Each structure stands twice: as structure tokens, then as C-alpha cells.
Image 1 (spheres, rainbow, N blue to C red):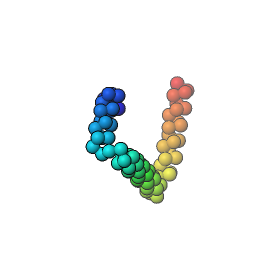
Image 2: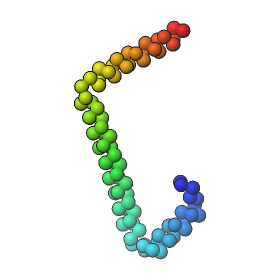
Image 3: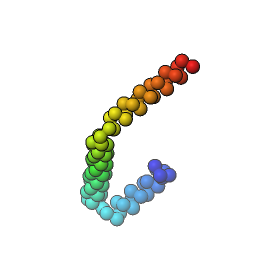
Image 4: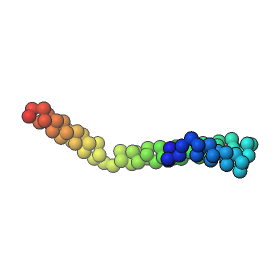
Length: 81
């Protein structure tokens, strides 16, 4: 994990405990977890939007089917040789 071993992580957690205190650490952890979750949700929405955009372009499905046919023919040629 980024070249950090167990002793380094223990020292970092100890310093965080001293700086923020025992009551604030769970709140900070919860906020960090929510931020990461929100970031992942945002990435999945962008990915879905990109797929919807590509699907909306006319001719994409036809090009994909022709590409699949060409790949199938190439595979058949490899089998016959």
C-alpha cells in the first residue's frame, strides 16, 4: 500500500489520534467513506453517460456487427490453416 508497512501506518494513526482526538476520528472516517462512495458513483454515472452517448450515434451497432463478422472470418481462417 504505497510502500507503507505496518509500523508506518501505526505511527500515522497515532499522530492522527493525537491531532484530531478520539471523538473526531470516526467522523473523519465516515466523511472520507462518503466522499469515496460519492466519487465512485460519479464515475459510474459518467461511464453510463458515455455508453448512452455512443449507443445514440447512428450506425454504431451496424459497424460493431460488421466488425464481429470480420473477426469471425479471421478466426475461421486461422482454424483452416
